[in-house]
Length: 611
Image 1 (cartoon, rainbow, N blue to C red):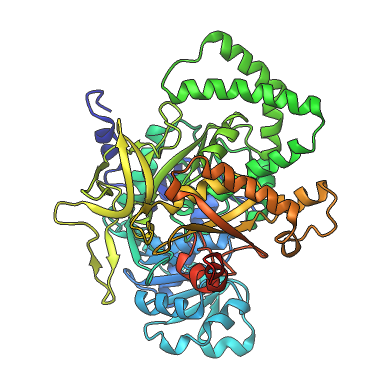
Image 2: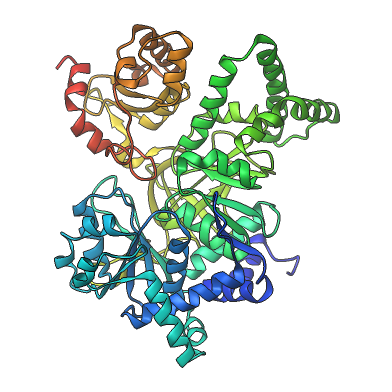
């Protein structure tokens, strides 16, 4: 590259003219024997050469059963290699794959299928087919249902076909015309769609975000340019592939870097997966980092005083160095030597139990993470660096890097991206990571930007020295009955900083004061109770336990001490059960569904205001 080029120019030159099929072809040619895709605990590793062959057969097979270039294909299955294979097969055909969250309701599934005009539906097996059966009469464009696991004979009337059969007919097509696969994928252009991702729909109907080959490859190029990690490095994929972060880090970035992805099918096994793989980079949604921090804190609470004292001393050294780096100042040799000693004897062994011992870059995004959690993890020697973006910006639009970061911010704009604030504080972005547009009901792609190319993100923030700080979602601001504008995200983040609190939602819109609904951490709370000899360590009983309620009150008091008087939580209620995507209060990416929470817990909320 020309050294006179800016980093943005260099990234643009690198990404120009590339497509996902071209990169996969390169990997199959230059790195054919390198590992590409594995599943945790299974002997099923595929090399890049093997993966390319399987994708070729499935791509030709999908064409044989009616998937057309430009057509849409919906996928609903768990994290397994077939998900990667069939997705990439559609892309090589020029079709557009879209992963569907398994937690969606029947009505939501119907909306996505009708809106996308899906030609092919790929399902895991009979259970998924049963969920879709009531919807099938409404899907006028549907040509075939593909089942990864064999279908029962009775399902043949639904025009179902096994994925293995799709592969077989694709192999037969290849024998008839060996050049067909390559001719088709070479028709792909950087501006063509590579995937369709539906937003989680926290308010209103989901929007179908159309991302291009250039969008996802530019994001991979930017990550390589801003974060130094080893080539061909191992990564762990644990988030749903309907999530833009997993799409980038689990599919597109490993293809660009010719890396090795290990699929963790069960998110509950994430830490064992990290221990087994030892990745150099890892992205965790805030809840993942919060649970890691809470787990370590719970272990330390039960440790002997000498061990706790050793940790506190080592953590203080790590935090001292962290604060210097965050301020952009060098770490003195003397402090670096003390940190190396503390790390080797105390901190690295703890990180090893979490699988973070090789970590070069640890990221967090999708929602705010409490600064207290970031500082605790930094005291472990893990600098968790926040990023910010959305599906419409192909993941990150801003990023903190190991060389330049600021705690509490989401970093600076990625190379080539521009960020500014509207008059009301809303964050506007433009640049090569902004998506192609939203899928219209008629199949057209509608722009998401204004005539000057700016995307209104719906987030509100501030900018200082190019570092962006997110203060709230524009639509989620609380306006009390006295007219005070309050950020619920700040209140909720301070509450969640306590290990006992798994989720919290601040209430107060059009109300006289702020209250909160609190959900206990379903792992830490029982441990906390057992350590204190409580007989019933289950959440329903703990929600009314006076000793635990006193501890939660202390957490609320600590949060209130950092809040202005109108923001302070006047009273709260601890709920007796967890919130999950399955229970409906959280989106699949673990964001709060505020409207659902308000409706479902209306009686509890009214009681907080004397109703």
